[in-house]
Image (cartoon, rainbow, N blue to C red; front, side):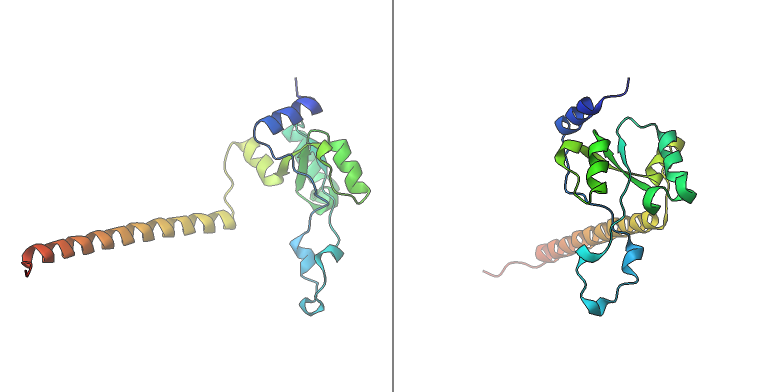
Length: 168
């Protein structure tokens, strides 16, 4: 049977969970596009989108259906949900304009991409993943190149040292 709120919270915190709190909403990057940078507007004045808060035991199919609600963008235009041991406490706080309290037992965040990957049992690679993978490949190649250069230099220094007698 799925864990209840107490079991989920105990499990999350005993397994190194942070028991995150202080979340008040989600700032979408598209909201920043219309802001004039010369205004020096404080971040607190930008409206936040309220994400849905879901229980840790919510089934993936139900979650994907929730994300597809409201024209395919889910609640508040998001494909993201906050996973909590007690989602009703989190949702109530967000609706009142308050931050999510520790008592809600925030465990993490889940996205539509996470759900699809779990259902398909396949990693979805997008442009960010490809760029990250390319960066990792380049760093690995660079490290190997530097290692070869250092090795060839130390071999050259050793050869010169052996060929050149020491002056006493």
